[in-house]
Image (cartoon, rainbow, N blue to C red; front, side):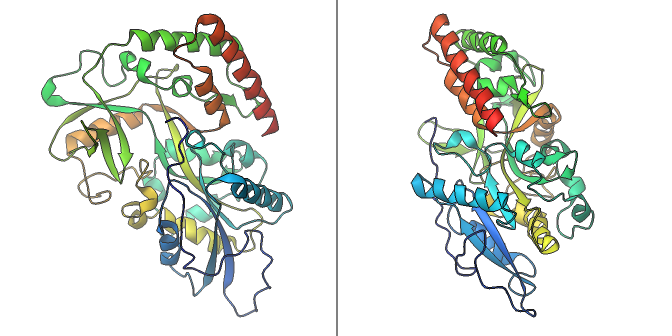
Length: 395
């Protein structure tokens, strides 16, 4: 299903009584710990995963307190809350910390920051470079540079990607070597989402789309031809679920046995010949926070190997730590064989586009219609392109 709200967050308010992100609470006494407002928009994370994480941050409840607000999962209450938080931010207030989804395509009613790259240019988020240099818990040099750079601009590192994904397919090596190409197979392009084939859709430095309307239509027609002429290949689509690489079995999802079964790992190339990766969620700090060091403590611990390997926050996307999944660094209690980890690392090396999903991806998705004729497809692409320009201009 194209737009599915996967799960309604029902995080228990175990930290402190709920307060609005923008404050309104009485000022703390001089000897009381700093109060940090944490605004959470992570609909893919269920239960008390976020509150458990916040409670476990070193110093929480002693050196500082954490007040959490979860943005409602759907409906008018969600839209009203997001609008209020955005208004508070523009007024120089708002939450201290943001934990946010970037997987726009999963939802009918958007995310708090539909265009994270544009928001970075608006000086909303605190540059983190000086804090990262003094990090106590994360190991910055072990986080994937290509992925982390998506949260960086001329002012430095502003957002910290927490998870990412790309379209990956697997084939057991016992079936022989793939005859259709390896590791980036053009034969697999027909099974790729068009917005991934196109790569980055906007030139954010110049506030314009990265392709013309004619190029959008041309690629849309080519992708339609690829899909219709695609051969049946002995591969399975692999995705992350419950902290494991998973494929669809005959009746239900099945975790891959990456410890004892050797696989070829493949993907279809984008138009530049590499792999497109999408950031699924990220963290940032309000540039107006009065407690930047304490706020960074939360992000620092959030990207520690301790949390990356066990927290439910990280069980629906690929980890940003370069060594997780090896025998010495298991992820959610699992690890790959040396051969499988080398296969997987080979795909990561070929990532050349890392982007946040935005409403632009959604519009490209809508423009591609398997049952449309060329004239109808041309009209769909035209409508999508007009909206893409409008959305980008308003972001």
